Image (cartoon, rainbow, N blue to C red):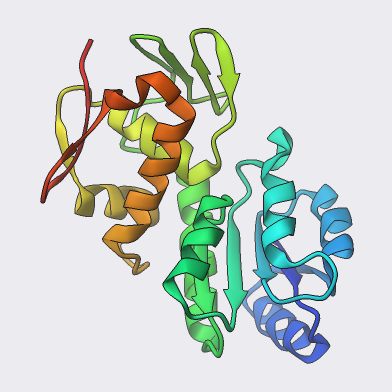
Length: 228
């Protein structure tokens, strides 16, 4: 069965161009041309969403945020496609739960490579980490259900945030270099900077609230999850 990609952009020629090339690669493509159509199309549970940011009405940021509020869609990779190039725009997208961020204009080869990489990461579930349940102090992480509990209270984490906390918690007391996190979670063929990891870790700490110090920053190296 072909993998399904949802492509959302208010410029129909861009949608048709991306659709044509993705279908040549063997993907099934569903399309939407505004935020409302995207929120309806997500019900088909695509394997990945290519989402334009600058759309009239409900923009891509709001669509991304609404998708991430639904538990049943939290593991679907979202790739933001936009003409915005400022760092704060990228950070905003990551904070809302996007998995990747590509600026326009972008070559179709690069877009397809990023789509394939994000899907591989989604399907692999970080194969080097054993499946199951991890319990560290007040935190319980269920890999199979994709759920984090803090003192038995459920916390929703977007996919990349979940993978980061799971990866760190599975190696308590060990310092994990940023490069290792980037390679393990984003893959070697996707270029993202240290700032991406820092943004995700900050969001994780916010959700851990008074237990945020369980994730320690090792200056100039990476992060460590405190052993209990």
